[in-house]
Image (cartoon, rainbow, N blue to C red; front, side):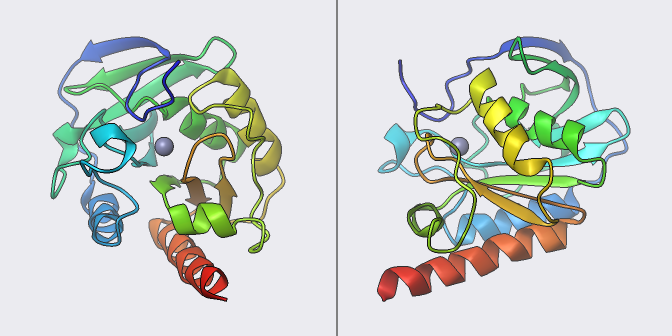
Length: 206
Ligand SMILES: [Zn+2]
């Protein structure tokens, strides 16, 4: 079974519909920065050329998440996102709407929103540095035997996020370079990830 990014494994019930009245300028600005530092995007020499990383924000009806394989876009607008309106973590099932299908890692985002009412943003990035230095930085790490995009990963995330301080960060042991940040604002979530990246670079240079 491939563990490559972009392989959709979940049960998706998607309605093709235009989304309206949801601002994505802030999430897009963070995405732009993450692309510049190489922790989100798409490169021929990383992960077999699959796009990687996805950002989400809570909405009135669920949460908005970047669409599948939008990694190479320089900037994003609302039509590059899907709104996830319902989910079932046990069945790995997602219900969504939009003009693009949601990221294959939507369920991991969903369990965080479900668990923590205060969380408004979840940013999933791929950072070799943070991932390698996670233990040194005291970042919680999920079991390396649990692959991404599975109900088991959702359960592992749930365990580590339920009582964590906000903003929080998590390393996905079974998903190479996979890091998740979550928080009450886009700024606190994004800045925590940047802080972790700087600290990780420092640790790895020791
Ligand atoms: Zn990933």
